[in-house]
Length: 317
Image 1: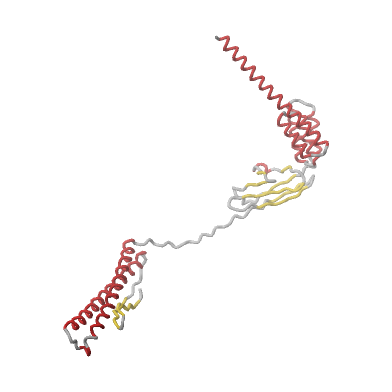
Image 2 (image 1 turned 90 degrees about the vertical axis):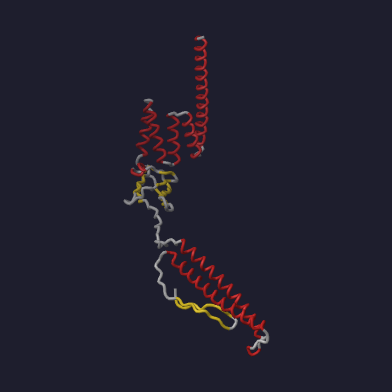
């Protein structure tokens, strides 16, 4: 049983090893194909395609020769800073393997050092902590801003972003061998102006709803009294026609005039009461906010005459 288990383990290890070797062979074949494509593009001076092919080949199967070709491609393309960084990586790889090509990479670095454009970014003293610097649409780390940036010659875009403000961009053009300093122009955040709004004291519910109820009752009382009083006046006028020169020919005509007059008088008092209710409710609503309300005398005078009945209200609330 133990023999079978050991055999199975050995077989599984061999299977995994063969799979790994197969995958490695596939990556190497891909890297070789990309390398040949890169050499062909480089001969045709199609530098963008050549550099991409070399970099993809290096990612599949890292090699010192491929890294040197990346550097040569960028140098031929005129991307001085990119070539410089590629030679730095080639020298590092060669040193790790004690390869003599490290010396050749170091020689190329010495040649390019004086030609690489350098840009120093300076920040104002009152820099916002949320500041983000984008260089050619790529975010720069704060430690990168502290040192000179090695950049390729040509036009570049520096963009400053601050929370709460639109980004502010600056374009700069630099040539081989140039050193430039750029003071970052920070975005201006909008100043929020807060206008204090006077607080409104809460209304006192009892006064408010009580006042509304009294106003409603008063309006109903005035309306009902006016309607009944106008009807009584019409009845009085009809009855007076049966009493020429205020002398009634029958008891019925006399009672009709007296009844109409009484109803009109009663409705006058009802209308006055309704007016008092409405005015009281109005005062309660006004004073429901809790503010001190200066109260002035209010006069209520009943008005009866012609074809109308009502109240005359004088003074100020």
